[in-house]
Image 1 (tube, helix red, strand yellow):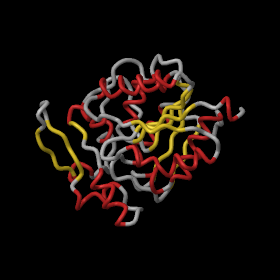
Image 2 (cartoon, helix red, strand yellow):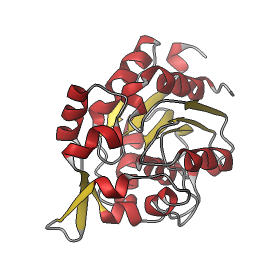
Image 3 (tube, rainbow, N blue to C red):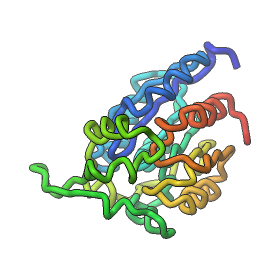
Length: 240
């Protein structure tokens, strides 16, 4: 595949992160001649978030490798279904749901997540509540393998997520059922238990799975080389 034939990589952040969480991955991809775009995920509700991502993909008018981190795994799974531009999916420490499954359901499928104890919630004017990770818990919970100063900056710039988004179930057929998918995740993820991540990769018939033994949930920031390598495998259609 020549550089001009390569798809655009669309990166979708999950809850408690933001678009800049992909910066190190973007640098590595661009260094290999692969153009990437980081989407600002609204984190308001699964249907609305997926519709927004579909709009972004449609606006690019190019083949796309669609990448989701954490909650955004649900978003890209729903957005990709029936969208011809998406040639592959990449799940970065991300949920890969079946129909009707939510982030909340999947996070509790196997023991090990400590996220609930680290959250603080408050009501929002549009209705319901939203959550953020308490700043004094953020480093340990989300990105224990990063330096404290970077973790503090990430805590301050985190994007809150609504309870609705975390409890919305996937509607329709999951994109991974018909679109080739790749997975990368850390072995010390405290948000999504590693057993859950392995289960989802196997269920989706992953074309290639990287498990980085000592990586946290913020694997795109702490191990961008592994994440970029997985995305490049998806770009090239390389099976692991």
